[in-house]
Each structure stands twice: as C-alpha cells, then as structure tokens.
Amino acid sequence: MKTDLLQDALHRLHHIVKETGISEATYQALAHPSRTLISSLPVRMDDGSTGYFKAYRCQYNDLLGPTKGGVRFHQQTDQSEVAALALWMTLKCAAVNVPFGGAKGGVTVDPKLLSAMELERLARAYVRANADFIGPEQDIPAPDVYTNARIMGWMMDEYEKIERRKAPGVITGKPLIFGGSEGRESATGRGAFLVIEALAEKLDWQPFNKTVAIQGFGNGGYHCARLLHHAGYKVVAVSDSKGGIYSKQGLDIESIYQEKQTSKALKAVYCDGSVCETVEHKVITNQDLLELDVDILIPAALSNVIDENNADKVNARYIVEIANGPISSNADSILAEKNVYVVPDILANAGGVIVSYFEWCQNRQGEKWSLEKVQEKLACYMTNAFDTAWLTTQKHKIPLREAVYKQALLRIESAIEAHGTQNYFTNGD
Ligand code: GLU
Image 1 (cartoon, rainbow, N blue to C red):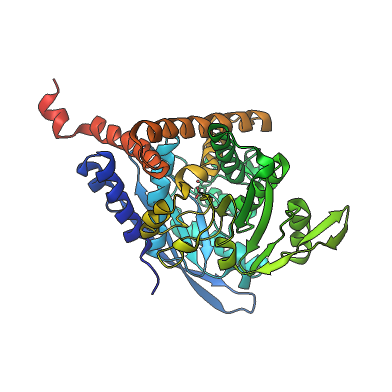
Image 2 (cartoon, protein in one colour):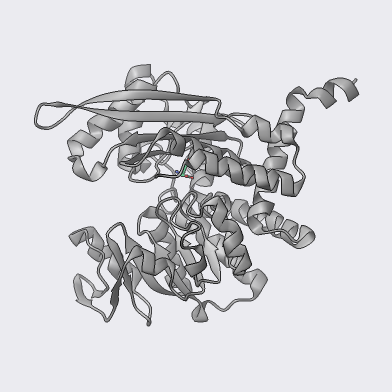
C-alpha cells in the first residue's frame, strides 16, 4: 500500500516540535492544510477524444506571505502527496527566510504518454481550473517533477488571457523572454551544491577524494552533478527512472547529459564534440545505487525511496536530499543509529524557490537582474540558512534536520504571535 505522505510528514513534524521545544499551538497551526482545490481537467486528445485528469492545488499555510510552490505532472500524484509537499514548501520558505507561505499543485498523469500539444492543453486546462485560486499576491506556481519552463510559459499565458492583463508574477520558472530569471533553471542543483560546499568547509573536506552517487537525472540532479564534477568530486553513479550506471573512475556528467538529450537514454559515455564513446561501467538498479559505498548519496528523484525496509542497507556517510521527502520519517532513526548525516530537503533543495522569489521580485519591479547578481544572492541565502542551522546543531547537539525545522518553526511561531495569540491579549498593552 502507498504510504500516506501527509500523515508521515506530520508525524515527523510533531516529533521535531516536541524535541526542539516549539509550542504545540504552532504544530496545531500546521496540522491541516488551509485549503485545497480539486478539479477534473477535460483535455482534448490528439485523436479527438476527451481525456479527464484529476488535478490539485493545495495552499497549505500563508502566515509568512503569499503561498508558493510547484506543480507536478506524475502518475502517482494524489491529494495527500500534494498536501505533504505544500507543508514542506511552508517549512522551506520559512527555513531560508523568503517571504512566502507554502503551496503545491499536481496532476495525476503520466506526462510521457502525452504529445507536446496534449501537454500544452493540459497545462492551460490546469490554469483555467485554478485561475481564481492563484495570483501574484495570492498563490504563485512554479515547475516541479516533470514540469519545466515551457509549461510555465503556457500557464502564464493562459492566466494573462483570462485576466486580460499582463501578470508575469503569477508564475515563476518561466522562459526568460516571458520575465523568467537568469539562473532559475540551475537554481535547485546549485543550491544543493552550495550546501555541500558549506558542509565541506566545516568538515575540511578535499573534493577530489569524495565519491558521489545521484539518484535522478532531472533538473536538480543534473545541475548538482555537473557542479560537483566541475569542482573535483568523483560522481561514480547516476540514474534515471529506468535505472543507473556506475563507474569506479567517475562519470563525465556533461557527456552523459548531452547523450541523454539526443537518445533519451542514460549511457556511460565520454564525448569529444559530437562524437561520444562508451566508457567502462556497470549497469545498476535504482536500489543498487542507494546502497553504494560512497561518501555522498543524493536522492534527487521521488519521495520515500529510503524507508524502514532499506535504510539499514545505506552505506553512504552523507545524504543530501534534493528530492522532496526521499526519506520516510521512520527511516530517520535507523540512519541516525548508523551515523549517516542527513542534509534535509527543505534546506538542500531550497535554491529553486529562492531564485523563484528573485524572479517574482524582478517581475514586480520590472527589472532584469544579471546572472552574477542572482548567483551571488542565492549563495547569500543558502549560506545564511546553512550557517544558522549549523550553529544550532553545534549548540544543542541535534541533527541538522531538527535544526533546520526549528529555524523554520520559530519564524512561523513569531508570525502566529504577531497575529495575536492568547499571550498577546493577556500580556500586551
Ligand atoms: N518545485 C520546487 C520546490 O519543490 C520549486 C518551487 C518554487 O519555485 O516555487 O521547491
């Protein structure tokens, strides 16, 4: 049976609330999503028939600002998953100090079975169903699993047609020409890379003797792999939804990416210009990849890939969560006993929403920032969030996940307080 992702996320949250001395009232404020719009999207298929697709938009909590979060197209997406992801967006924005609440959207569909035209009609249908629910000051969608800049462009265009005005700030992760930001495409991978670099500095690591395995070669996984490879780390394994490749000597990430763009397959190759040759490698499964004896394991695909059934088989020393929720709550303690150090998703993959925030600011101000400015500001936000959490781990001897949650929850707690709580009325003037 599929795990109820929201229940699992709340279970972990409650545990951390108790461990870190956050008030029960704050937990209660986060124990249920504010609202979810569920719709059935009619889409004209290429053969003339009409397909119906179940769609969700969950606005979890808006205490810190308009709600923010991506829209995923995936065959396993359901209401509970979308709500859990929206809760994590709430915590993520709070943890890295961007003035947004949390939301998430999803359509239950296998996007690989749709043509480009069907995909466009689906994206537009999603916006028609949600047009009264979203908005630049209300709720701002973005890319997520199997959605990209092109799809965000269609969504923004549909919204503007409905509203009869320009409204680029309604969606982030758009094409540059529609008001997208420089550096948004690579932001999630770069953010994770910056966290690894910050950790390396604390632990005095030398990149050249560190091995890395990355599950998932989508946007986040690829850019992080590319930056790590460039910085001298040895990326020994990568995978996609069909399986993975392993090479003890390390893989040439750019060549693999180039090959995947043309043949759609993940192949262990080294390319010189357009000529690629296969390099020595082993074909592995996604499960094998999770069990590799590497320094850093980066799950960058889907949720719950490490749970109580396989957590004890993990051999990596560090896990950096680029995917949202790749570790189930009951695997946390198993990994802790094995001394596996986990950099949690709401910090490791926050680069995407941070640059989404920059994109939204640029749209509101009618500005266009340079790539240098975006990358410099992204580095500031990521390192500030990491350094604050790191200090908390040292001071209170708690895991990094608890420290990051604590800094998010303290901000949410302050917002609840400022809105007026019992204390406010009894102790205030
Ligand atoms: N989908 C991304 C995430 O999970 C980005 C969200 C955004 O940019 O709003 O963080």
